[in-house]
Image 1 (tube, one colour):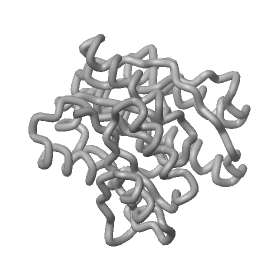
Image 2: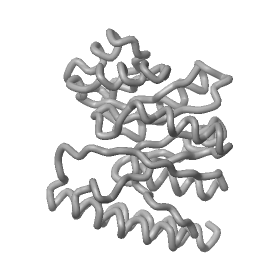
Image 3: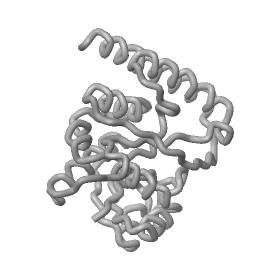
Image 4: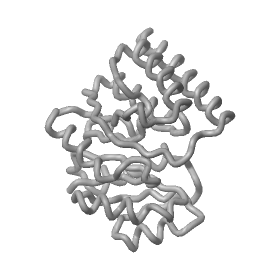
Length: 225
């Protein structure tokens, strides 16, 4: 069985389309509803997904952690999983490409890489800063270090489930854990659609927050901590 974890919070407008597109590529959806106040959970169930609901809002990182723990317990033989956002920013259909890369390339962690010509300038600039810092400190040559479209092997699931805390740092946290754990990392092109830009104040907080995380964890990594 091929499974997609779908963390969701108030995504009633898109959740059915996400599940429908996952079905088209033979992917079973496990939706982690992060205590939505709308009809996300109900619509996901009607669309045929397995739904796990948080009793309070915990954030995307905790939703992913809940999903991983559920899969490892419910499907002890599971080998791969892909994380698919519920807002249609990425094309759910492309999840199969990430899983294919895991299997064919025999890697443990696959992260999408975006076409920067289709990314708003402020987002592109912030990602450039994060990418340069991450690659220098973690000794990598990655083309995208903050893409939320990821897939990983069972080995990676075991490593990641105790090292996910969420917030702005989620993608870098998972990637840093993959590097520290000496997991084999691969990137594949993915399409992205931006429906809105981050406000300047929120964008500045994200830029600094993620950069500080990369600097602190990167220095620790270089010092062998």
